[in-house]
Amino acid sequence: MVKGVWVAFPNLDYFGPDDGALRDIFERLFTEGVQGALALGTTGQGPDKSLKQRMNEVERLSRVCLPRQLIIGVTANASEDVRDLIAHAASCGVRGVAVTAPYYGKYAEEELYAWLNKTLSNSPTEIEYYMYNIPGGMHHRWTLGSLQVAAQHVPIAGIKDSSGDVSQLISYLEFAKSNPCSVLVGDERLGLYNLLMGGAGFVSGFATAFPGLICRLYEACVSRNVEEAAELQQEVNRRVNILLGYPSRAMVGVIVDWMRENGIAPART
Image 1 (cartoon, helix red, strand yellow):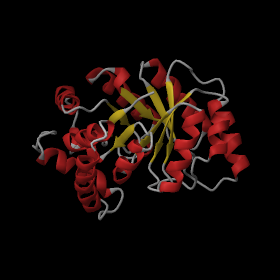
Image 2: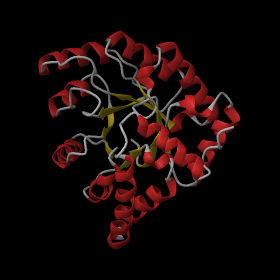
Image 3: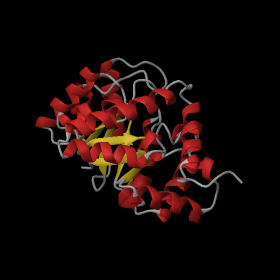
Image 4: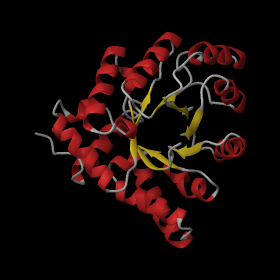
């Protein structure tokens, strides 16, 4: 199970083909206190790419940082595609995969359970599974029932909640009490609440541009320095609210621009 600050890494197309430059970005993030990266998820725009492209990028990422510092998004509608992505990620030695609900079409709850049974049965167990809840990008939330179905097939190491819904987050924190796993927020505005209520940390796209700020917030929370944490949370909220003023797909480009402004990514050539 992971904890701390993990970044939701942007689409690799923004950074060009130079492995050395990409390695430098990760080294800067890790120096700032980031623990690892979720790649090819929403911010990574993984579902925009073919399975072959995604697999090639997993192999590239495994060259530029330690595979154990990687969680790979495996979003797809077809169960067979998700299974292929999981198997390939496991063969690359990554720490884990992030599993979303299928994104095309609305499923009845029983249909979603059937999709999970088909997708996760006989999956590799040497990697960790993170159930990624992002109702803004899918028609479905991971309900407690669907988590229990998934847990019949794979060891659930964590839940990433990007709903921004406090009641949803509370239900995941309650689930984690009897099913030990990390609860990580993708909506950075809930970071203080999540950590003080027993959550494990962040998976944050914003943190790729402002890693030091998010890492300081995390440290203030775990040390129970509530006054400092509250001040840092207010600063995070202010900056995240600026980001949320952009259309969802445009946010990735804004994050990359901020990475460049902050010296984390090289300037455009």
